[in-house]
Amino acid sequence: MPLNKKDTQGKGVKNASTVSEDTASNQEPTLHRGLHNRHIQLIALGGAIGTGLFLGIGPAIQMAGPAVLLGYGVAGIIAFLIMRQLGEMVVEEPVSGSFAHFAYKYWGPFAGFLSGWNYWVMFVLVGMAELTAAGIYMQYWFPDVPTWIWAAAFFIIINAVNLVNVRLYGETEFWFALIKVLAIIGMIGFGLWLLFSGHGGEKASIDNLWRYGGFFATGWNGLILSLAVIMFSFGGLELIGITAAEARDPGKKHSKSGKSGGVSHPAVLHRFTGGFTGALSVGGSEIQQ
Image (cartoon, rainbow, N blue to C red; front, side, top):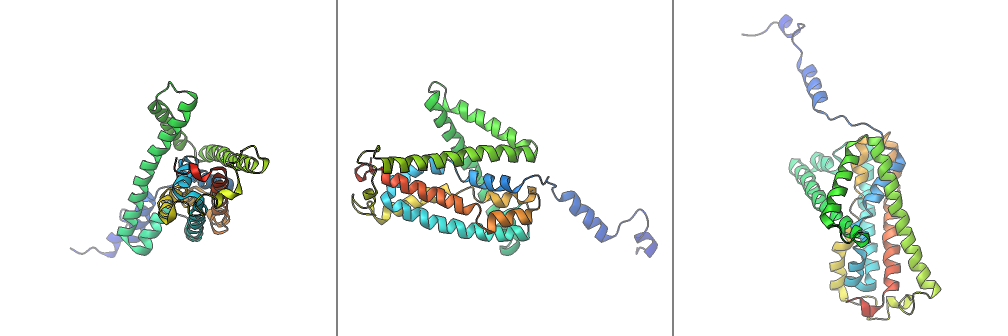
């Protein structure tokens, strides 16, 4: 039985456009925009400074020798280009889905599905690796405490910080990331001091770049193998896109952080300089040890 015009426009009946708008507003998640530019940059930069750099740079030098510099250079160029592209897209469309949303929108549902779940699985695995590394670090000072206790403690603390107000989360991430950045700068400075002061002995020398077996001391195979560790160390830079939905004035903030290279430039510089000082400080005879 067809409905008349009065039935379809009465007080108790909404038209299709109104229903769709109400449904979209109810389904769309609401996030508080409380992150400033300094929060965004340090969250991304701090996220990229972790076990992949602190624990990974040693194995990378062992596998590639002085050629690790080439590996960090290639990986840095790739990271810069990806971050440049992601920054431009986030500025135009600052949504919570970030690259998974863009994959869904421009490549199709399967690409978005695969990208989103792949990132989720990756972060679960990397999160466990980070917690295990934290336990290993703490055992240096507290050898009698099992690693799993420290991992569980940091797991609770990290989740508690993530569940609080976004502004407090941003401040916490900012200061802890700043500590990591200062630690990296200190390590690089100490390596340069060993190199130029002579206190590092015969091992610390610029001649280490070619003295023991040449620049490719372990061959191309060693360099290719080290790229897995090197690329892993750049993980976390993509967080600049994840923060778009919780940033104040995301277009302006992410334009500074992503499009201008405000995050990728320091990340590449930290790794390349760290690899440089590490390669100079290790003799060729120690690479395979």
